[in-house]
Length: 261
Image 1 (cartoon, rainbow, N blue to C red):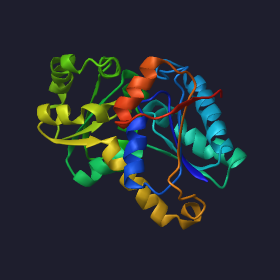
Image 2 (cartoon, one colour):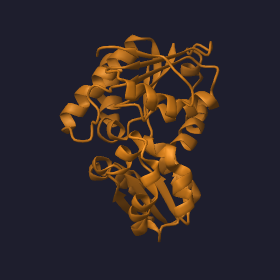
Image 3 (cartoon, one colour):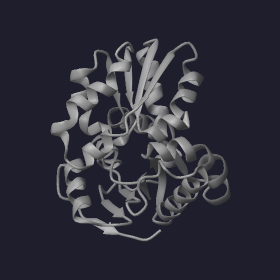
Image 4 (tube, rainbow, N blue to C red):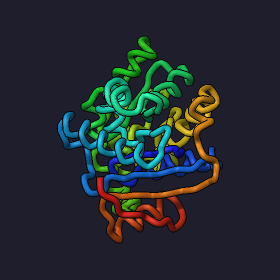
């Protein structure tokens, strides 16, 4: 059995790479739904349907645990996947998200004013605000959508990044910690740290440790996972630009396999 990592596109490769570096012995299957990216402009019902199709593919390809690296899917579908999809289809398997680990890191930092920067759809979902209010009810939360960052990152436009990023960060500078609420942002975390005065929480730094802790606490799942170090990367649409972006995220050439959901 494998660990699956799912994203609506290729941004989740940054999370997958970090997990693989932290836990290199496990077998992994990555799925990017590049044919239908982005999910953020879809209805909640459509996001549920797309996520369920991705889960069907990953569980059907021997995944025991799946990480929803997509913040939109984590925001809109994680709870439904855990409470409805799994009991009906795969009650002995697990689906985990990336929002709770980031919020837990903010809680551990114990800074009373937390900022969140993410895509507009993730901010509008209220997922970070709900989880921060649940875990840290006394914290003040400031959120700011950053719709231009993903296009800049994906189109190799980092030379244009600093003024755009500075503008997005300005309303958050009174915060003591900042959650980077998009998988793409792990590519620009050092630029954020140069501009933001407080603690920066990047998902690629917190999710691997949380997964390692989860596996240590749940030997019933860890014991089912193969430890041969095998990797498989699947996408639902494949272009030259996707190959180049995957290379940037993984810092090496990887074989992208075209699949249908």
